[in-house]
Length: 504
Image (cartoon, rainbow, N blue to C red; front, side):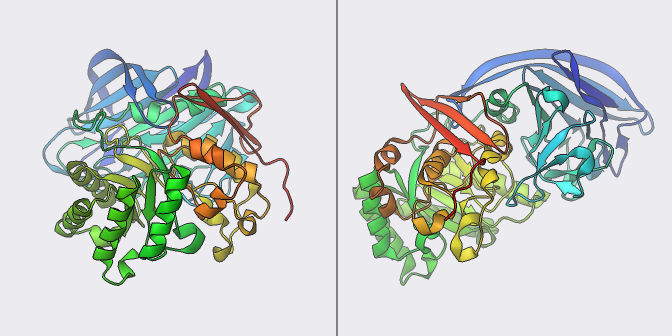
């Protein structure tokens, strides 16, 4: 089995192999199509982030296929959207299968240029496909087609009950999909959607909703749930680690002055004397001032379901509104199911979630709208002096057109203290907070620097979700990111540059 893709009458993917291999069969060779089913779908739905509504419009083809070698039957689902294509495999049955891998490929036009990174929290690289020396890349991966004919973004969507994937560079203009492990799955195997977002320009790329479109809608009780609220957060960790209870109250007071909705209490709070009572005291103090509290937890402490649910219930009982869970293992089947369990349990308890130290998003913020943000990004902490790191200036103009294409990113923008700028400027930092999409936006710096800054009124009004986003002409990956974003009747225009580096 193979496929190719045309866009505006031009070939953007050459003939590329399809298939999935299990211990039972190679579902990609020696196949016959038994029957075909076609249908279309057209709806709009609410979403938080780049725009307030997404359009889900596609034509679908379902191929019912028989592997003639072993007489195994399976399905290949294919969707054609205006801004891309999606496909996935379904292998029915009730028995146990070991998935050996997939034959899924993207055979790119010769001369394509790639933007990629080899780990979620590494800086992006830029090279002609034929010149890349790395062996693998994580998702998403962005392709600039030859002769300025447009862009592709390659990733996966609706990653559920299946291990995550990455790309292998084969050296012949072809990207091969590889799994993080060879999982054993009982019952029907349903792979994530293999996605190719296609656009003639960066505005179309940024405004694509293909990643969320392939995910199921939320349960009725989660749609428009009053306890799911975006907003801005003060956050002590970046500026001065996790400060004690009394200092956290000071952060809450500054949140009030800024009009922020949240205070995020990060790692280290469990070391406070009488930690839970101290935390409850901070929560009560903050709630009286209309500031809600999020609380951090290491993922390794929550692997036991009974312990995890008890922790969530205890947070809920003292009035915490969200949980930031950090340091997840790689994308094995067990880890992916762990994410799903957390989302189900927090939804039942009406707790919002931030997955930090994690993989890329795969659109599940549509299914679980209380998943407010997601790391899997080379964020502001990579520019912090105590770690002796300095972010290359170009990264700011790469991320809006790579990682942020697949979902909200917990970048933690807007450092204003002069000792931490190191080549950046205040306008650059303010622009990050507009361009980097995250319904829960951690503002990195000590809030006193916002209150003392001439731009404080901008921060006081800045939204974290948008009704409309336009990528302005002149934007170039790695050089210029120019965005106009609307909330209600108010427009915000922000520009990030990597052409000029201001010395200290």
